[in-house]
Amino acid sequence: MKLTAKGFGTVRLRAGEKDRIFFDDDIPGFGLRVRAGGSKGWIFQYAVGDKQRRMSLGAATPESFKTVKERAPGGREHTVKLGIREQVAHLHARVKLGEDPAGDKTESRKRAADTFEAVAKKFLAAKKAANRPGTYGEIERHILKHAKILHGLQADKITRRDIAELLGVVRTNSGPVAANRVRSTLSDFFSWSMGEGIAEANPVIGTNKTEETSRERVLKDFELRLIWRHAGDDDHGTILKLMMLTGQRADEIANLGRSEIAKVEVPRKRGEDGAPDLPAYEIDAIDLPGERTKNKRPHLIPLAAAAKALLDAKPVRADADGKLREFVFGIGQRGFSGWSRCKERLDERIAKELGRPLEHWRPHDLRRTMSTKLNDELDVLPHVVEAVLNHVSSLQSGKKGVGGVYNKALYLRERVVALNRWAKHLDAITSENVVSLRGAAS
Image (tube, rainbow, N blue to C red; front, top):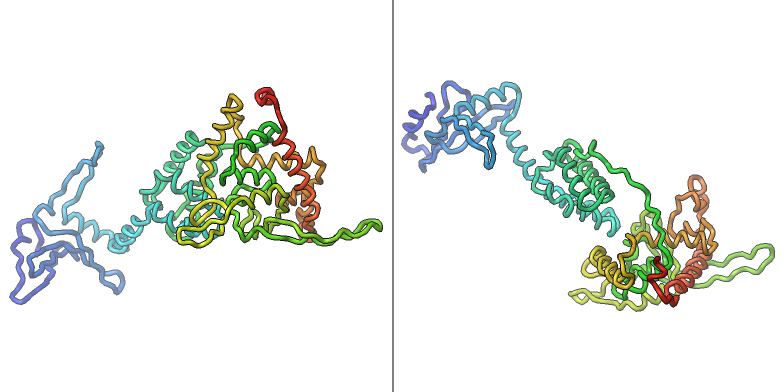
């Protein structure tokens, strides 16, 4: 029989039949499925090798045979929905060309579920396990905040233009450096997605990257004094003061654990040219494991008395379940994370006293400032400064290249001297009685 708008309605099951497919005489595989309950639906059946495939094409109604032109919602363009016979003829032609329409449809449904947001959850889970908390926090913010406009899109369908437009928005709202960082995270996201078989290409490739200039901001003494004075004693303020005293990275201090505060022995040192040996002694230190540092190397940070006092002043707290927290700072399952708002408040307090906003600064400038002053003002040797900063691969460290393989010296004794010297110098800066801060800033 030929399935037409007039004839298909007369099809009936025989007595006792519960389900039967009536096939069209002209289009191979085109069928009408009739069930005892009265429902009727269109199907297309075909073979792929020795396997039979069957596709459901919707309910059978007289309107199924009509080709309909539909206007796209909110637009001027029209889409054409073919009548059922034309649809099946098109499917049959695809099968003859070696395609598998049912398999393609299943794959399309599967890929449709792979939205950017859905894939991002898997990506973030993988990154959380492989990165330090501070680094992961940056990645999470890029994906969940900056890339929010992509969340509803199918990951494999995101284009270079989509990425370029997003980066333009970030560049306008947050600056060129932020746009470059978001770009790097998105490139990593799509590379990871390709490795997981989710995406076929990385649409970030070819998008423009903004040229960056290296920051050279070194804070002046009066600026250090203002920051220290107005930082306060809350988590944010204590972290900034510890960064000033130790020169360490923000996330290394913000995610400091109680178990990382330790007593460490400075080993005995042989005297030079007949001088007596220097005895071993014990110090307070932060002992960071490799997974907590940028270069993945363990790092000891001697604590001057002022730094240890700041840590001693932070009480041991408990979580909601009564379990003592491992993190010194922050709340919940991680360390401190409220950087943006806390710095805004700090800058407001400084501006109120100074009479104008302080020149733009970042927490990382504290690290550069300490390094500069140790080298230029306190006569600390460059390789010791680099050891303090955990820059073991820099030229000044004495451990670059082949030297890095054989030179395992920690310069721990020298670092203790350097950081104690810096703590005294910083104390002189921050406690200096300045008659007019406005004058010092002019």
